[in-house]
Image (tube, rainbow, N blue to C red; front, side):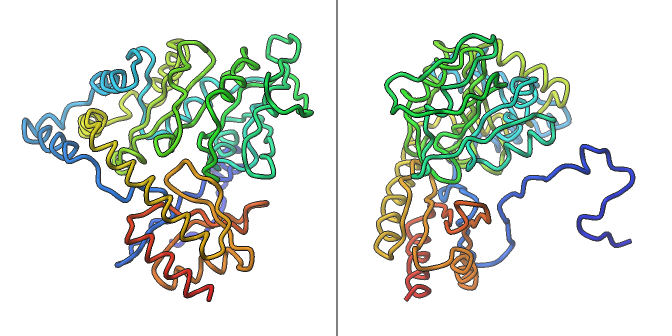
Length: 386
């Protein structure tokens, strides 16, 4: 029996009927494709990752019949060493999307609405719809940056007086009353714009009774992590992924770092959902990736160098490119429609991401590929534009 797309069933729950699911980046199965649409790292992971996985299988393949460590203690220890924290401050999940999903349920689902930017990771409103969380979007500034003062005029959850950010440009942030939490990517997605640690700290100080989740999927490509702040702020949760800077999108490994009481909330949700989020191969592969700091540094520096070269080439072609601290750039051409550019690139076997959303519908989000892929992109754009 054939089913029509978007056909609803009388068996669906109201939650499912009302959902608007997240749309992941396209994963076409085409030969000779230059894929610059999903922010994957263009370089392979550390060779030690494959060796660790092969070693896990070679030692005793029969162990795959056994469940993995539900706590991923080996990985927690490796992350703790890398970031100078304790294992009790770490939560492990099946990719940062699962970590974020648990954070929405465990830490952001309150009676009051949560705040996040109007232009940001599009999974956030999906989680709100799934879990029945009220939210309010905070407009980015005209230059697409996050203005910290917009998050510092809110009444905290204890009902005490408003806290204002100090040392920031004076403005008139909207008084939102009580809030259930704050979440934003840093660097932001899809813009790539970075918020400094001083500004993040001001947001934390202004909202002591609200959890602030900083989603650092791309921070290794140009920013400073907020993880060092967790020992000073018990309301801070920092979320990372090994998909980007560690080149492990295929293994699905993410983690969060925060005060042990925040981590315990995530563990309670995890163990009410899926006690074994990571398999044996993912755990040993992720440990190897975390321990190979030399490969990590070479890979991320190569991406950063390619990003700067790509930005310069796009600027030469007339594009306006936002300053990026991520492994992608966000660019628009003042005389060319973004959707038409994306379609023209597709005819040349190059795919980039185009968002049909207010304020950014004339931008393309372009993943930083290898130098050869970036040259192919700019050469194709040059032919299209000229």
